[in-house]
Picture 1 (cartoon, rainbow, N blue to C red):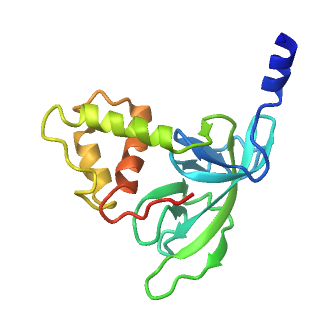
Picture 2 (cartoon, rainbow, N blue to C red):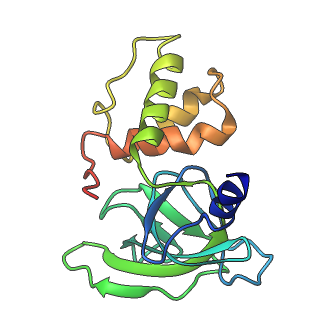
Picture 3 (cartoon, rainbow, N blue to C red):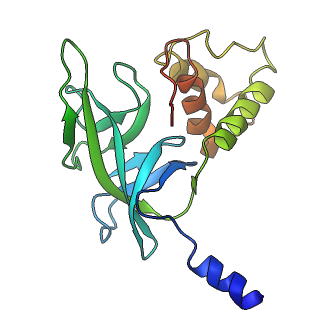
Length: 192
């Protein structure tokens, strides 16, 4: 029994093509042999697993790119909901899936690497945790703002301006911001 459990854990991992969600801010590398962090993957964003080996995951992420900010992949078109941000000097090659027209941003796909772990198969538990953190901590000083009261672009600065007055752990900051932005009054909900 113990041997079977150990073997199950040993081969536990993600399958090629599996869609998972980051549950933490994760370092991103341009190749699996690099020790230089090229960017950050933010929590609650879905990635497709392309390969898993030696503690690293090669993933693919789809999103939107504002031509004026070529080092960032956004969750949706025309909103500043960050999914993946690269350093300006470490921008990878993006595949343009669909050219943006009339002010619309390009739909893009990018492949990169990150460390194994801190992924979940289901988005719901992360959003529930973020909701509880927001509800519990952000109503101590004032009446709780409805999450659809502000736009996706307004939430980050509003939340960060009050964060220091809450006991929300620094590691959960982006989890709550992503929750607020993805449930904002003008947000497009993920349908996966």
